[in-house]
Image: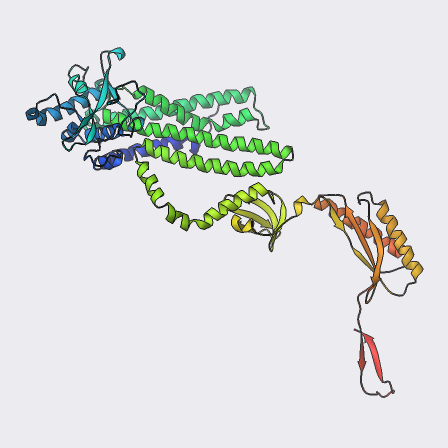
Length: 550
């Protein structure tokens, strides 16, 4: 069995994961400087403890910076005498980090409430919130880590890790974190600290995430290979298209979920575990949205093909527009949620957009007009993709009807883009909707023939029109009048065809037949001519004037 070369789309998630983690420690240090503004809407509190999410974010940042004095500000030390808090607080923070390193866990900030009241549906008292667990001898002996509402010296309501949880720290199963795994690495990696965690722990977690992805990707590839050998539908059936769209995003999604479930209580540095869990959660969400993105495209293509097969072209155009709108909404939603999972405060950005909404709306008037115009074009459907039409002075084939503009390919093979606001307000002539073609030439017979010859020509032409099966009933030929240089016979009829190429072929044959019948009747076609009379003095022959054709 030959192994195909690794494609870029297979290794791209791995590269994204590695880049994210290489930049993670620097980002973690930057977050520690502005904890209050990063997560908590209650900015009045210096440490951002106004919500459970603010408590968790601030505590994680303080522990990652190994700033135990600041970390103690997130602990309820009310059971400790004030005279001892300055020394006991940092020591409690160290014991808390040791317990978390030994297998404890703290919920990701995005999992916690960002309201000052916390969650009210967690079956806990209104002033309590579960934010994690402390390790025990086994899973049943784990100690819940509880946050409670309290009041600071300024009278502000804040959230702190409860005094009961702090008191349970000495009883927790605190051992040397990650001693078994770290022992596999050189002492230099165990002693080198990056972002508040040993380098060995970062390698364990990052390597585990990469191995999880590669393993799931290999399993999916083997399954796909087996299914392809059993039965592969070359016509692009729904099941096969879904399978082809799923491997990469599905592998990313499932592998990151497995990584999160496996490493939640792994005995490595809590800071490294927390940060890798944050990025793994973001990548899992990206994988899920990536999969949805592909499903939207596949579903829209299948529905559009069915609509086209049943000649419901209007619905097909609407599906194209809806597909793009759904993908745009999915992209916006995925971006906001991924940033939220990574700990970036998107609430402030959304609020800023709300404040500047008027200015944005004024600056985007044309864009809004084009979106409204595109809705009008899709709803009214004056044209479809593939139609030949004339819009103003532009004639060509419609290639695409987008959210902002419509693109037309002209006969000169140039492409013209027309904003939908302009397109929807123009007079549009759609040649593709034509159900028949008008055949109405005027035959010009030369003077010099008598009335009987003209009558024979008319009779012969009427017979030719009657014999043409592709002409609709009512085809007629009549003497129109006498022109400057011809006797005009007018023909009026419709060719019962909608295809332009077929119409051109039939028109050519009919014109040749009419030409033969005119010649057989003893007439000929007129050649446009004009006679000019020149008047002047008498010439040598005594001629007063002469006329000659011009």
